[in-house]
Image 1 (cartoon, one colour):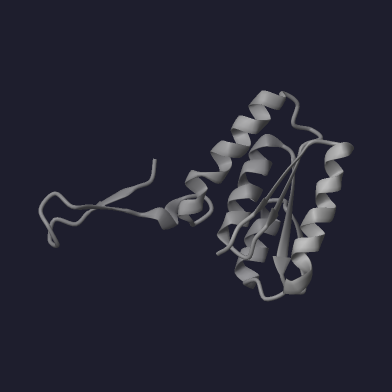
Image 2: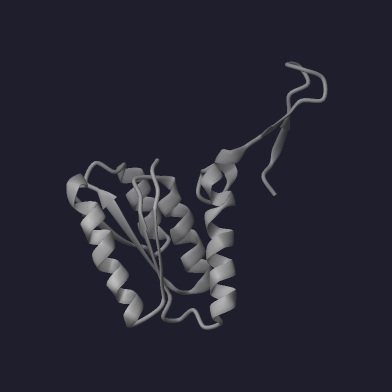
Amino acid sequence: MTPLLDANVVMPGLQLKLEYLNPSLSIKHRALPPAIFEYAEKRGNTTKLRVVILTSGTAGISVAWAARRLGCEAVLLMPESAKQSVINYASQLGADIQCHPHGHLESILQNTQSYQTHSSSISSRTSH
């Protein structure tokens, strides 16, 4: 579904994928939402599903987008240095953004995994 741009002037038959037109503005959108949708489909009920990701960029937007489509909660653990544009977009998608000093993020992610005993969570680490 990613739009293609004919680039015949560069090389005959060449087409360029316009990845920036994905909902999350990133190629990561190809992998994260399908994995979340598959997990949610196996689980059945997504009302208590919480998706937690340690991210500093567009992977978090992909998670926020998928969670919004499923009607579940997305928690983005981000470094204080995260781009404001990413924070704004993920917030508009309904994600709970939690910015912390970079050195504290790993331990915070481990603490969020304790939610799994009370509700179903998906947690992940990603880099830009």
